[in-house]
Length: 324
Ligand code: F6P
Image (cartoon, rainbow, N blue to C red):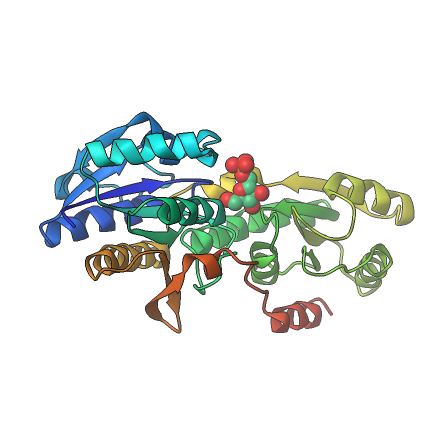
């Protein structure tokens, strides 16, 4: 291996820049060349490459987003698109890849490495924390802190006006962000994809909390929740059934994906970048690096993309007890 390509793909997450930096610098440390591929698989198809050195990644460890930018490439889903990508890699003498992204990115990587002889190692970068083979994905910790900060601010105004807020947080398929920030910010109820609290129990719980003397409440709703109503429909439903509540909705949206990474995410990114490059140099391919029991480890990509990580059910109980 003489030249390693690195790219980010899919939804961005805080810490991706720190991971790019770690990959580039680990290559420099081992006297290997490193090439940045812009805009993920699409940039690979278009030959959008840039030679990197240890200095090209200065002052990015603290920056959110991804300096390499990201894209969802439809062309890479076709055999012709992948053939173009491979030819560009060969022309530029790139002989291995580090892919930073989520399950879509890894699915693409698996197909590509089955069709062509090119070693690929993945680094899990997504705020959703939904990838198997790592306790934490890159950006998740930062997103938790961003969301808790936003909920704290909403709580200030909720309590000034005796209001009930439905706050929608990200998590299309999993409730990790909702569950952890809900507990961290003291939410009344937390609605997640993995559980269906049911509308009756939601109303009961809100009624009970009003009776117990609470004047304002926060309900956290994961975007992929299972209750069958989105936040705006929930507001209407509660307005209709519990008219004493003054209800408001806040959808946090993409602000959850931005911002400077926490120290935890920066350290995680650095460890993952080192592990990814050194795994390639050790002759590994088709694995994702991850953190399990505080140790860096490798999981086959096909296992990483199979299903989603489960929520910790103890947290559901803790949340229940806290909202007594
Ligand atoms: O990064 C993952 C995620 O944040 C999901 O929770 C969300 O559904 C999705 O990205 C939205 O991303 P986009 O707007 O880029 O499609």
